[in-house]
Length: 504
Image 1 (cartoon, one colour):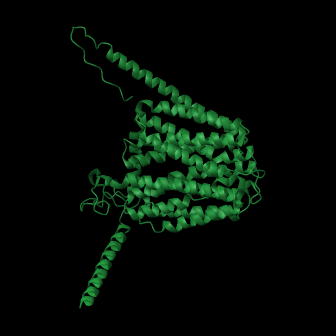
Image 2 (image 1 turned 45 degrees about the vertical axis):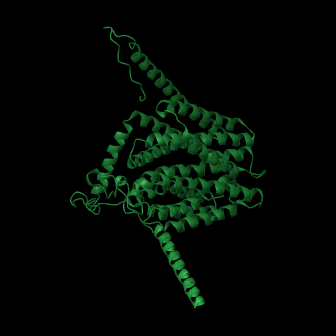
Image 3 (image 1 turned 180 degrees about the vertical axis):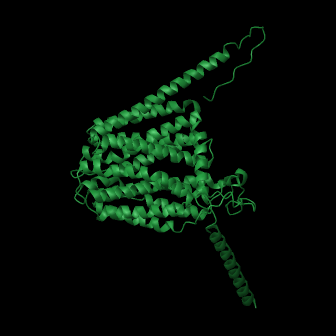
């Protein structure tokens, strides 16, 4: 009898344990359901990691000029690389609008497909025209980046914005760093050829492409599909339910068919465009936002140009055919240092309204010095060190600029300004490319190019140093003029103390 009772008790415990395990498993599955914020975030992070895990990226110039492709430095510099700038500029603006119109996921899939086409061409195509086609598709890749960074805001509630933003952005840095380190280790210690590094990169972007199909299709977007648009209702302000998705009221989004029918002609499309133009006018009418955006566009144009051609400079100083290349290690370290600097700036307690332009001027001058050092040195390690300083400084400043622009804007207006600032930066970069690099322009060699880039950042530094000095002096004079009569007014009564000027 005792044995029978013990057997039944044990059986009951096993049944109870089995039920509890089943409940736990169901809870885990519920958390990973597509409508929950965790599921799309995980899938998007998988996509971001594998799309950036490209061990061949730091060795592109040595690969193109090596025995696999057998192109000359001049062909790579003046005929192949400029195509990326031109295609990026042409594609960016329509992609920016169509990304929102088609609700992100199709554009992310398009980006994954462009990755695969780019690396297939890189592996198996030959000649300058084929490499120019490759650069066109890589321009498509970079232009569609906006879909990756904007997608997550359409499928999670505003309660999770900060967390998912940090996840999605940091995972790309992790992927790029891991890819750079892996490439360097394989080249330095395993003697792997650049061809097989590109094969690994192709496998990685193929995984990213497959993962993009598992992303849930958003039901709304920032501009063209704002379902919570009744009387200016902001989607991000809606309360969220237990699983973290926005809890839409029944009456939200029910707009009369005559005023908003997204299937009719292009009326809604042009209405949105008109509203975007009005928003832009309001955003750029603020002096502070205008100056930060000006630096963003100017500096990003120069940064993209430097990053695009720095491998050619390294190959000129230390030819990859005659020595070991450490491009991967340098890219990994520079990305890590830049990420640490960007993270640390969040803990610096400074009035950026007052000191921000001074910081832009000082660090832009540091960038100019680093580029001029890279240009005049013939020591590859000094050149590497200059690049570390340049990239870390830029990543620090772009973090500050991003925060200063975004802090007083809605998510929609920030996305709009981000797109426009990027477009202006690309327009400036295109002008630089046409004049300095292109075979139809000055067709300069890599050494004169980097001297011009250094002078370009020196001009940026001069603009913002002069502006910051003017701002500080004007604020000081205003304070003195307010504090002048503070001891005693003309009628013998104490005067009213002047207010502090924190805005300008």
